[in-house]
Image (cartoon, rainbow, N blue to C red; front, side):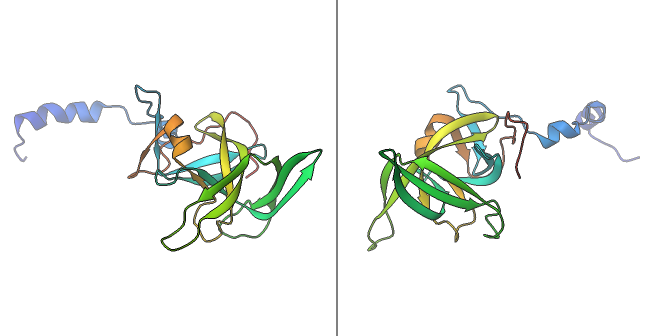
Length: 186
């Protein structure tokens, strides 16, 4: 029998006696909440878009000031004196085909988006959307943009992040997908 250092002989029984993590603990990580109330999130997180219950992947981007959602078939109009916008997004962002969800919302405003050097800035319409992440339903202002050439349909920017999350750029999906509604449409 090989000789082990005394420390290894004393520690080995403790390691062997430690209970194994349950499948539930491994599947749903605990959210890390800091003293300031912010939760540690990965740079990618699953969120649920309300009111449809559609699960999408959001990129948490500290380099972006505002949040953005993928939008196609964008149509501005007015109803009863209120400026509104109708837009759709595909449930399967990667495929860009199949079923879409369509929103009809009041316009919250417009935002000017900086672009690359030498390119003019772009104007985008903004709306307030409700979504769920880590069991919390929250509202945020999103600009509408065609994100077909991006990997993720939703980008959460600093204006939202600073109120709720600290982003760990080395991790993904740190927060469990645990939203209160019992129905998921995905």
